[in-house]
Amino acid sequence: MHMRKKKWARPELAACPWYIQDTEAMRGQWKSLYPADSPLHIELGCGKGVSTAQMAHDNPDINYLAIDISPDVLGECKRNIERAYAGAPIDNIRLARFDISVISRFLAEEDAAERIYISFCNPWPRRRHQKRRLTHPRQLVQYRAFLSDGGEIWFKTDDTELFEDSLEYFSACGFEPVFVTEDLSASGFTPNYISEHEEKFTAQGLPIRFGRFRKAALPDGPRAAWPEEEEDP
Ligand SMILES: C[S@@+](CC[C@H](N)C(=O)[O-])C[C@H]1O[C@@H](n2cnc3c(N)ncnc32)[C@H](O)[C@@H]1O
Image (cartoon, rainbow, N blue to C red; front, top):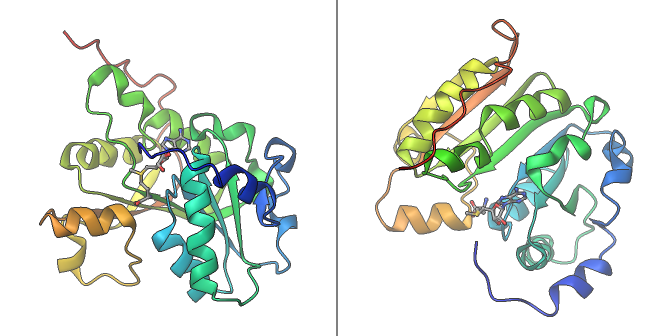
């Protein structure tokens, strides 16, 4: 996401008690940051957190961790959360900034997340870039480590190719489909919290692909080496 630099974002985040600065130190201990011992749901690449803010506000019995790499969008996310809570205590959501491609440095089995949300991640269409997709097997293998058995990944995208490839990635890494639709709004699936990108693509008339994938037994071990993507000609 290319966004104009926001001078206010870093200082505002630094002063925010629910923005977690020392992310590596929290590995295995994220649950200790919340007053309630509730299930942990993690949003990967939360962006401005339009849907995250509303979802966390409406579900006080779930603890949320919203992650992004950009301090500018996290600043917007913080402000959206404050707007959604409208002065009520913000105790079931935490924000953190780190690179999801190395997420196993920050989350461990003890963190035992029950759900992961991935919404409108970059489709990285060029073959040699596909390993950067947030649903790529090299990511899914990392997520398995801190996702509880039976935990789910909820994945949304407007991109057909990314979605179809991701169905294969999930299957190869021991995630079974619980619900899959090529058109989320037509499916009537609820609850659905609409993110910034979802609103934009829906307004363009694009159907939103959505799936829930449950962590199950590995087929015969994760594919240790997913075939390396060929270089683009
Ligand atoms: C297209 S936006 C989607 C934002 C939001 N989920 C939505 O649906 O509107 C993708 C977000 O993922 C973040 N992101 C991409 N790669 C990342 C990475 N490796 N680590 C952390 N965040 C990442 C970007 O900064 C951006 O905010």
